[in-house]
Image 1 (cartoon, rainbow, N blue to C red):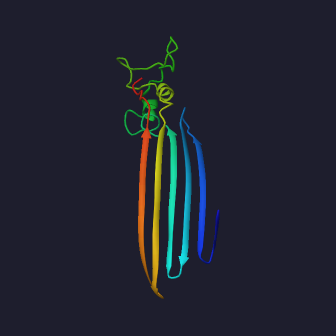
Image 2 (tube, one colour; image 1 turned 180 degrees about the vertical axis):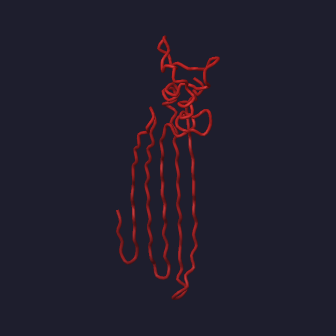
Image 3 (cartoon, rainbow, N blue to C red; image 1 turned 180 degrees about the horizontal axis):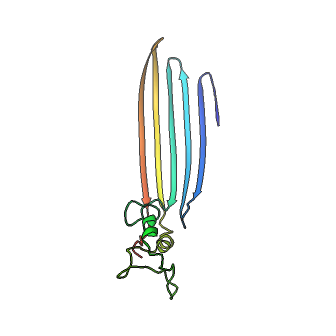
Length: 161
């Protein structure tokens, strides 16, 4: 939404993203609300720009999608011996951590067992300002900004399976 008059203008928008990951139990959801306003009162102009977002995700850490070190799923895929089955004879996830085998863990087991480890992230990015038109060609401005970020990742990490 947007609108305005000679004395002010406003803009308000929202967005929602819901991306499914390419791996099992992997997703990214983001909700965003943004508002910009500006008002004029004689020689004064004041306004704000603010964006508020919330992200929910599973699989954005090293255990579910990274390949930064030996604990990442993509590394496990390459380390797992191709002769190792996904499941053993008992129906459990198989692993090849045995003498003479590679150091790979079962990536499907890690993805399945960590599927409820959701991360929640909040961010507020904003600015408020005021202008004073001293005379034609000279304006003084004061501005105050904020960048607030908070996250929470809960759950239990099963990595060496």
